Amino acid sequence: MRPYLIDFLVEAHAAFQLLPETLFLAVNLLDRYCSRRVVYKRHYQLVGCAALLIAAKYGDKKDRVPLIRELKSMCCSLYDEDMFTQMEWHVLNTLDWHIGHPTADAWIQLAKKDGTATEDLEVEHMAWYLCEIALYHKEFVSKRPSVMARATLALARGILQRSDMECDSLEVNRVLIDLSHKLDTPSPVLYRKYQLPHLSRVSVTIENFLRHQQMMASHAAPPTPPSEVMHKSNMLPGTPQKVQYGHMANGYMTPPITPDGDSFHGGNHHGMRGYQPVPRCPVTPSPIGHNQYVPQQQYQYHQDISMH
Image (cartoon, rainbow, N blue to C red; front, side, top):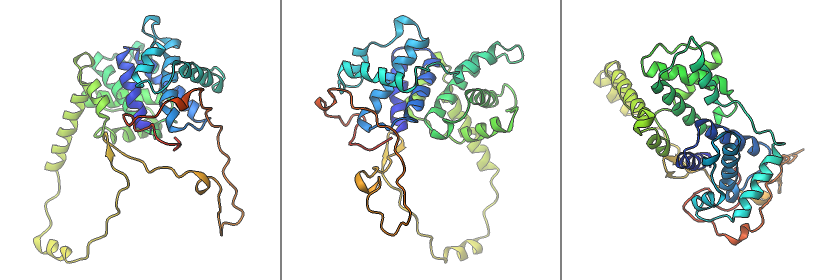
């Protein structure tokens, strides 16, 4: 469910013209909340809106903070206005009102102010783009913002040929390599955002860079083996292929539906000696009035009681 919600937050963040650090803080609040609570699909978008609202109030310009009625309209009126207030209060209490967090953008700004790292605007925009690509993938959640900033700046400099992709630590180098493997499948929403001229069209720049790299790799490919070897290998029986689950939606593989009830939590586990059910995290309480609304199919994360 993560890519769908990040797409929504990216669109909402761009629509309200919020600061870059607000998006990173909102996703950080969302991740910290979800690490303590079990969130049902029907509340997932509501939690995301509450995180964006808190982040905007914390560090953005006052005249650009989203209004609750505007968030309600973006959610197609799936939630009542009181539910946004209740969820905002519940997120703050769950996090013990610890809102501030050093974001990747903050470290990028520090690198710009450092006399040894003078960055032009295109490098900064590409570093933002790379950091936002990382938001879609859970394996980067545990990475420190300072590491993400150094890795994205090094990768941006290398792509734009400002300098070699030099990394100052093994951890930064590992993040850089992992992130470079995600560049060929960006979210269409994020690609369109960074296709605009005021963001230096860095998504197009990376697409052209990857195409050039692919052409160079094809020219450097080893020659084709002799025909008799190919003929002999074709006589071998083919390896059966595993069928992929789900279907593609918005460029992402649809995850399988999480089983509910006894088949997932406890239930009858015959033949499993000493089985102990895994303790569950607290469940996000249902805001008052949520049963008045029927989830629509416009957002795929509004489905029945499958957990994040």
